[in-house]
Length: 334
Image (cartoon, rainbow, N blue to C red; front, side, top):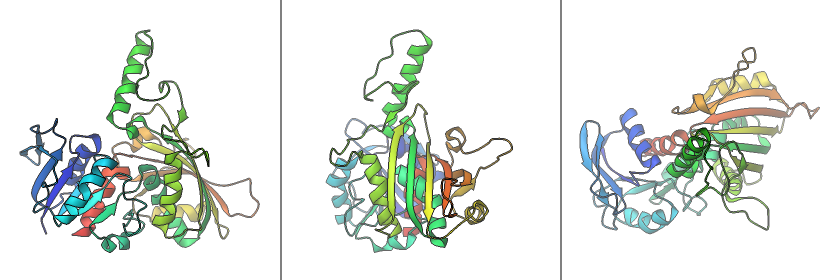
């Protein structure tokens, strides 16, 4: 069934990826409306052999729209999302605006697709790091409940937006030319460096916003408020695709062989675990892919009860961490 679709924030990195994914997956579109800020209005964008003109986003933009894909930031979602819902559209929102709001489903289709149809016009796309972690952890959790999850992330600069790429590129060029390296939007030099994720730190807990999102969102998506989750999130000088080191504590003993067997059948997972070649998940190879790459599957040798497993994963945060996840939700809506 072809539907009328609007893409909000279409000129941004995720907005452009929305179009790529919609085209690749042959999403059934009857009419397409491309929306962005006033400064982007009038731009021409080609999609499936047809040229579209970007329109300015207004509260009246959603007449006749059935599915609205939002990726223009939380403030825009809060302002214009309700207008889209009022006009009869179902909003799939990529910002953090509605993720923890009661009554708004927070969905990873490989994990909790049943929640999609509980919407009241709004469906939230989780944080990119949360999605990349949950895709491989959930199938294990279903077989043998995960009691505790410890994750450290290595997050690409493009996760901060297109400006993150520009800043890394500018610093690389300056370094190559022997010029002084300038930092603009990141709080620290990103080239040849690693620093705590550039989100606000809660002085009461010491956790930054990204870390808190991974904790709270996982509990909501899994429907398991008692699962213990702790996260440390950092930026690394990688253009695209996030990596994560994950330590899992299960209720019952589990072996690496059992983990491989479960993940080999899990949707959205690709096992990259070649010990002989020392070939494991890398952001370079995960970039542009929809699957989450999983490797370094091994027993946690710090425990003697067989209930600990270590994983290393990599996933494209622009695709599965954002655009692809949202389009998969839209596919299940129709």
